[in-house]
Length: 592
Image 1: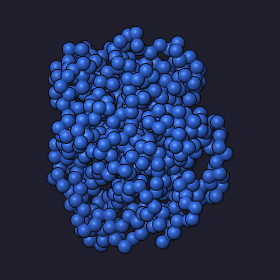
Image 2: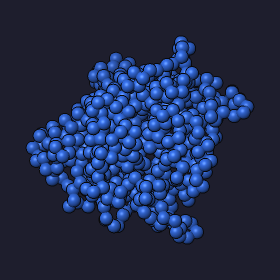
Image 3: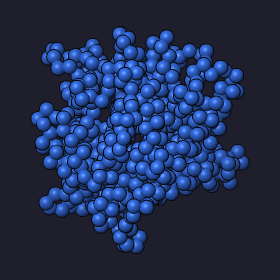
Image 4: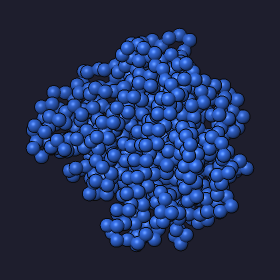
């Protein structure tokens, strides 16, 4: 792994995302002291020191370099995105499945920097209790839970993207200190990630427990932890299935014993994922009902019979969709009644702290035609497109535009992405407004209610016990029915009678609901692991290539090819790393 030293070097200044959501107030900027003896002597003395470092952990996660990679690693190789004018060569190579270990988007240093911040809090915060009586065991327990969860989240992104990864479990606190973390197989890495999440479950604040409402989604709470656990268990099931199908030769790092799974292990992981999802959904329903009862509000928008998951409803008299309330500025919403909050965990951005990653990738400026990443036509309103014209999500998430190039107009119709950049995207409403370049303040959502519903549906479809088919379809239908306003185009269970059709339905619905949120490529990789083959991934991705995608098909023929190559510098700096075998050179990489 690349050397992560001088991690809080000489005066690291970090924008404190959601700084007001920390336990104490702080300024917009946090200045941390150097990572040498000074930090031990003059820092970690007060509760404010700890809370400032916690804010820095969240701030580090919100770094544009991290969010950009979350978007690229989780979405850009999939069937729903292409590139055009304005995209860098590195980005085009990734979208076109031309993966090189020299590509800068495969640098992972910012993830390990965030991981190390969490490790520093875990190592030094306990000592503050002896220095500052205002910092109690209860305060530390909540923070400890968040640090375990944030560390787990970073490692989880890495294992889904690179497969075999170093695990940063020890803090580095000196300028001259160097650690070469050992590289773990995904099986062991996921077990370690789950152990962190098990610890987080014990300590994180109960969702709804913060008196300031925004803390319940801008900081990690128990619902966020259970959502992560569900996701991790889905991947444990997929890798276990792949282990069985491929007779993988992976071994435990500590014992050297072969790692082997059984069908019972796969089933158990899916069952755990279902239980994790239920924990989230039950909690979120309770919170909504308690809020309505406390405020003595009429249930005018809630009907537990027709809307059992209490999703934000469509209000025909308004000019915004439910997705505006999830992704955009909720200040424009009516205050006459409260609506269910579907966000579980997200990073908050504001007018003073813009989400440049979203703007740089999905942004579009009509005045100069700058545009980088549009949606691909095959997932749009083509004959076999997944979105129906009556589907509110197509109108809320995308918009047909004629893009301009620097040399004049471009006659090629594209599907621009408005999920984050558009202020209003109601069905049939003209006058779409766009944020100018660099002005995007869209939040980055990690987990929301419908994601959890569809994770549960996926786990049910793969486990497939008696009754699982009907329950999985009901979950998918609840998500779909909210957005498909034409009755004749709504789903019918009779069209998805067998397990294979149900799996395809859930996968398609996740695309319709979660497009451009950094989820689609991971869904495809997980499917390939379960199948032990990349055939379905190739079938889905090929149509987006003008040339037919034959070259890309060859490059995606191996399961290993679905994961990223390790950046060349990391290989040179950490002799414990081995390159993804698909990307190994004929001559070995020189180790320093």
